[in-house]
Image (cartoon, rainbow, N blue to C red; front, side, top):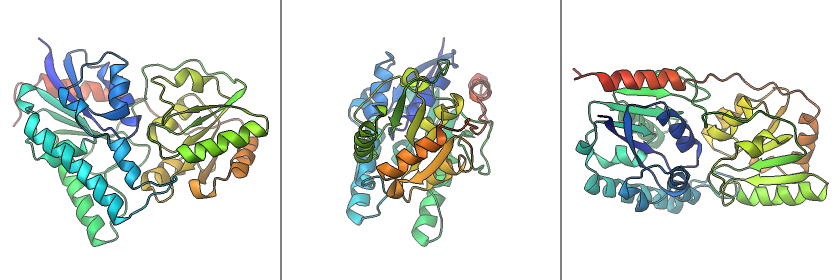
Length: 337
């Protein structure tokens, strides 16, 4: 009999669900039910995965986050923050009222914010996947309180893995990263540039401006992400001669693994994007720009520069097998003390 596992994957973008699906393929002993929403749910449906019925009722945090990201810039307006918080509360209440964790032998959560907010008691066999261990600076009282809650909530899980591109965090196992796919096509240099804005609409307006300008100057362009949802973009990315990509986890992991030249755009005031992009600064084949300075002309000039260079991406380590082994070890224990 396989163990019944609830896998709660964040619905912010597609970086979470793609790495989660990759990891789940290594859990042959698990009968997995997924809980997520929005484009992440669509990604799993395209792969005939079983979704918990609540997935169709939860609001996508990928959409909700747009209340605090405007034109590729994080804003802290009270109205936007309130709307995001209300969506989180709505989802967490639905989970508290409708989700019975006793139906499952194990829970795996990839930054499962609503589950943590629900107040439900986690089973003894619980696993956390995250690429952050805080929500940025703790420079003021509010941010300190929020980060304290985040860390306390993360530590409710028995096993905790930091799979980020940067940072450590006490109390987290850190073996490396989880790639976004089981395998990648053999990269080759095609004749087009890919603009990849990831799984949200945060860079949609900028992408349209870039696509128009690059097309005018004679470049062939393919735009991925946002409303141009593609369940598996790796074949398109593998044949690109260069990328223009937001600094999200999945996009940068793919750029590194397939050794693709890239102009990396970081959302203004987005601490995670800033740290992700920092890993590529000063490397041949890469340029980093904030969205506020990423005019079409500057992006075009940056592309011309990286196209003359041999890319030297940061070395990432596929930690999928190590993490899967640790989870299986936890699953096989009769009881925990």
